[in-house]
Image (cartoon, rainbow, N blue to C red; front, top):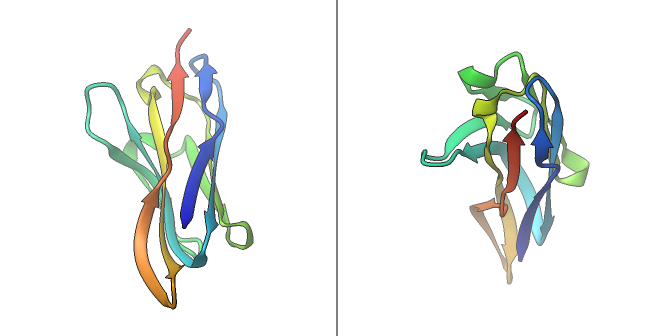
Length: 123
């Protein structure tokens, strides 16, 4: 019913930049918040950045000043611009969408996750 798909990961050298994209599609009525999370090898998943439908953003301390989250509501998309990447940013990055979707004749609230996109920061 609802799909969330990330793209844009890859291998980059320290100090480099990447831009991740995430698109939600399907039987969507309205998207509340969207966000980016990551899981590094051997670590728990952690929040990176979130953005509400009115553009209010929140960042983890370790990415402030380096990463920027943005969103295009009309396209159900969110982006994560990552600058000055560090080796410790290496992780699988996941997109999350908290949304209301159509289920038969009903509307339901749930959050959906993408499959993840790998980011490797290495020289």
